[in-house]
Length: 342
Image 1 (cartoon, one colour):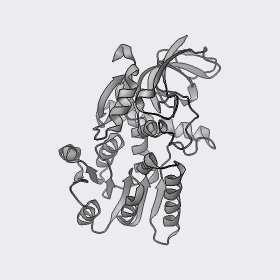
Image 2 (cartoon, rainbow, N blue to C red):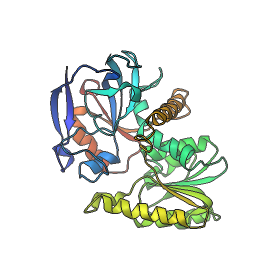
Image 3 (tube, one colour):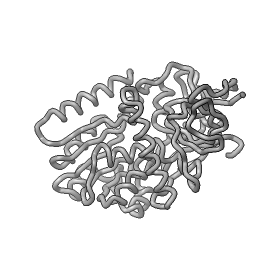
Image 4 (cartoon, rainbow, N blue to C red):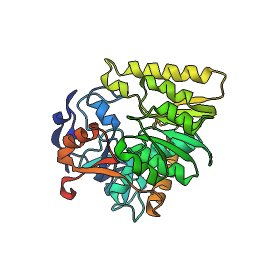
């Protein structure tokens, strides 16, 4: 069958994305053909179009870090059913009408959870859940700081933390301060306030965790905000966008985190990698992916977690979706859907 997909031909502006029609083979053993219902725009695509994302494929390729869709055909031995709604973490390939995937990588989406809602908690939700419960392991009653707390990852993380009885201090722009209060966080306007000084006022003994998605020189301030035994989790380094080579900021960051971990101060620093363990422990990676996404989908289904969507774009306007995401100031996930359902 033929499918339409958006191809990134090389380094360039979002408008260089090109629509391409190509023929997909029938699913092989263990594979499933999935009709995309929703895919997302993340920091990864913003970096990839510049050729600045670590371990990105060679150009040309189809972006799309995750997707939700309906199984339309299966190969022999595939443990999913035709007509079943599923979610997948793909890294690339999601911006297409149809995608061939390994059935073992698909996670069922329960009835009552829409494709758009499910899409908001694949990359964003998995990141938030794992930072909170698998990496930092924050306990009820402790305090954490979340940068960009009103964004895609941040807004999910705030909800999960507050639900777990954790005090959240969140940074955001002036227009998102009330929204953070309504979610149960203590907001800080990062443009108008001295963030480290304000955090020290609110938590003079330090905080249990800082979730930093900015990186750069400010990562040192994040480290200094930790209480003894606290954990710094770095999600990304925004300076990679303007760096001559993408590895330079990451190497600088990794070396800094390694140095801090070597200090005898009982604090910890990690760079979060959603793909950690995938190549060496594939079965465990898939089991944890299913466990974590199933928990998140359950919270969506019972109303314990809301699904913030900033804006939705049809697949043919993927360039506009990417351009909008890069403008910043988002209040949730930017979603791409098939043209027919836009």
